[in-house]
Image 1 (cartoon, rainbow, N blue to C red):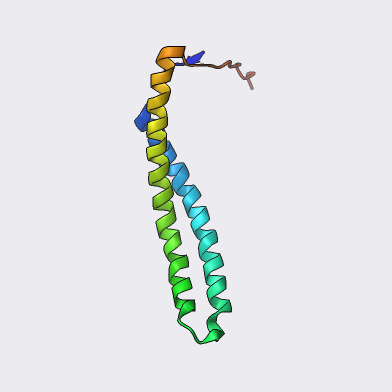
Image 2 (image 1 turned 60 degrees about the vertical axis):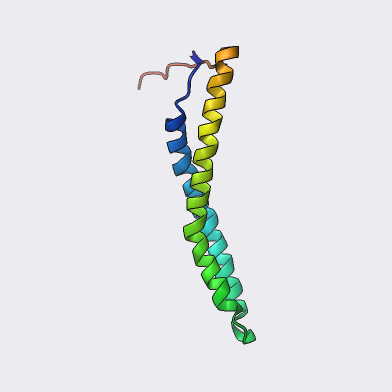
Length: 102
């Protein structure tokens, strides 16, 4: 079998979801660390804890959107470039096996 064409929009949709989920995970970790830092700084009497909390919660919203969009654009360009190169060199060869019947 040989892969000679990859649908750019199809790959971009998959990348959008995958990178969006990755951004959500990173956003949750970032938010937890920011809220933890805000809790540690709460007794200092400065306005920093509210900024840390706002920044951390904003990461849960911003990072999935940012990662998803960036991943989709990257996949779109990558698929386009792959199709261009595959036209010259013939694509990627893969070998498959049939799974044994259950």
